[in-house]
Amino acid sequence: MLRCLMRTTLSIDDDVLEKAKSAAAKARLPFRTIINEALRAGLSAIAVPADAVSYVTKPHKLGLKPGMNLDNTSELLAQIEGEDFR
Image (cartoon, rainbow, N blue to C red; front, side):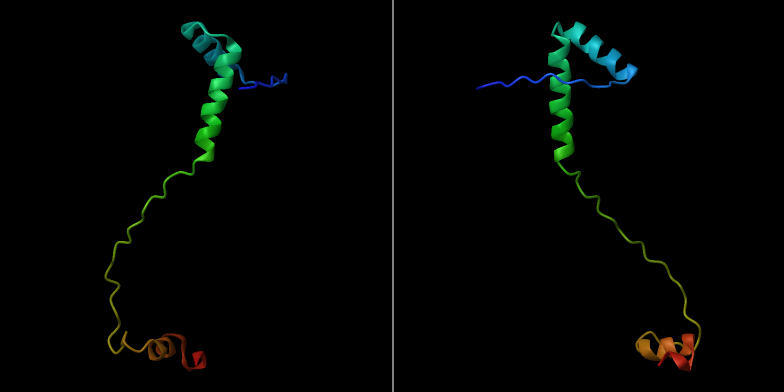
């Protein structure tokens, strides 16, 4: 596998820098290796969309005023909105 190395400058927050340096020392790996592995892992995680969370609607009794009928929505809207609705 042909590796192409490219030098670049990154601005890294202090807390991230300390974690990376600590990880490199603990693993006894070069700082550059830790940064590249972290970037690969992070970019892979970003590329995979998160699983959709299913949503369950909980029914509630709303109550209906006497004389209102849910079977005829047009009539119900006319009663609620007024005759100008039609």
